[in-house]
Image (cartoon, rainbow, N blue to C red; front, top):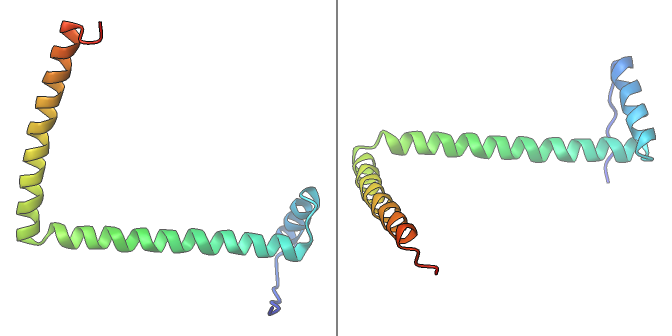
Length: 96
């Protein structure tokens, strides 16, 4: 395991010490946990940014945009049919 030395503002140092004490953690455990959470969160945010960029690139591709529009139309028709069918079943009391 490697070591890391940091210079912290006094206020942040005190906040870390207070929180570590409240949670009955050593400063090293507290800092390690905080960094692990930050790294995971940052990785997730970067992955999300990549997905958004990919979706935007796909959206600007004419063939993909056409396929999405067709799918959207198909799903809209299906949703309407399902909703009409559900209302009809409710009115006839199929569960009785």
